[in-house]
Amino acid sequence: MLILSRLRSCLLAWACATLALLGQNPYGRITGRVTDGTGAVVVGASVRVVQLETNVVTATLTSSTGVYELQNLLPGRYRVVVEMAGFRRHERGPIEVRVGDVIGLDITLELGAVEETVTVTGEAPLLESATASIGHTLESRTLTDMPLAGRGLTYLMQTAPTVISTNAPMHGWLPQARGSVSDLATAGARTRSSEFTLDGIPNMDQSGIIMFQPPPEMIQEYRVQTTAYDASVGHFTGAHVNMVVKAGSNELHGNLFFSHVSRPLMSNPFFVNRSLYDTRTGPPTKAKRDALFPYNLTNRYRGSAAGPVVIPKVYDGRNRTFFSYGNDFMLRLTPGSGFATVPSAAQRAGDFSALLALGAQYQIYDPATIAPAPGGRFSRLPLPGNRIPSSRLDRVAQNLLGFYPLPNEPGTADGRNNYFYSISNRIEWSGHMARVDQVVSERQRLYGSFSTSLVVADQDRIFRNNARGGLQRNR
Image 1 (cartoon, rainbow, N blue to C red):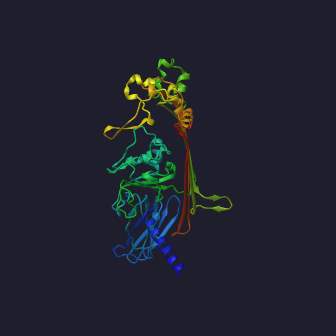
Image 2: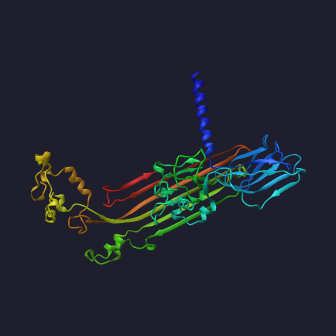
Image 3: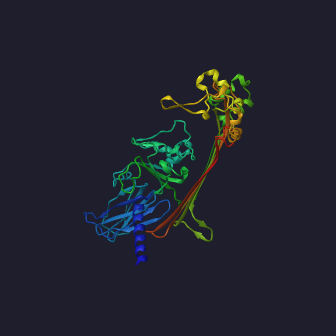
């Protein structure tokens, strides 16, 4: 009995999960009623839709009320075919189905032989009127042809009404900056309050950050729902963003992409110019500029391919088995420059006497001389001459000082901003994603997808060691 109880519990959990996932799937639906010329419903009529890119057929029969529903349709163009004995064959299309669409399509059959066909084409696009949600759909051609900052898909969320970016106008929107590319606010909600999904599966890190940003060539389309009333969504106060991975078709196709930006195409940063033309450190020369503004570049390499799975003389997957694969690689070397504060040679030896000339506020007090004072307070004695005795310098602290360089700039009077650094940060990013679709029958199909990314970053070593910054790997 215990085994049966556990089995029932597992089946119940599986059923609930399945129902939840059905509401969040990344597909579209076509539904409607089939009637004859008098308005009477047609029961048992064959309704089929054919995806024009793959010739994959999805079929069903009308119910006792003449209603049909074709679910789990991949985004794309379809032709609807309705057949029933005693009526002319009815064809309609192409019909554009987008992610999340529920298209209502009622069909009226005309009396006649099945061999006769009524074909409806060239009509206005059908409106998705079966749900109350408000959204904006971005199609594949828009994703690949529109100029994208950093080729980041989330950048185009700003084309949807009420969506704004809270990034700086010149932000790069590169794929490794997952937090920054998620900095979008919708309809007055705060930044990072949206939910991202990939093929209906949550694509989220913590704090409203997208987990994986696919290359645009691998996305069929994505929908930004700014007002979503469907019970299957609701884990957000901003927008629901559902991206659909592009499936293969009967035609093999692919693309390659390369972009390059480097220092010869850039101007000097402000602080580089400030130090370059500071005559106290010598005249401006190429060697001085190279030291202040290290070589930098951003290279992007992307490629994708999609089509039928065909193994010559072994397997022909046309109309049945399809694949798609894409990758994205980035190498970025970026200079970083600025000012930091480091202890002088005298301060390393415990001598802070030079600060007393600036005022009593720089007096150092001896923590070993704390004594009670009137009024419930405590007092400490000043260190003579503002010098810490060498016997009281901590050995561990002295060893740590070896990681910090000596000042290379005059700095302020009290010794701040006395070190100018110029470094080169290195970021390597790689991403891969793939999808395989298998048609089992007109009512059954399977698909599997995989995505992964790796970021290797060596940044912020302003002292050219591990005292600050270092190597990070995030998968």
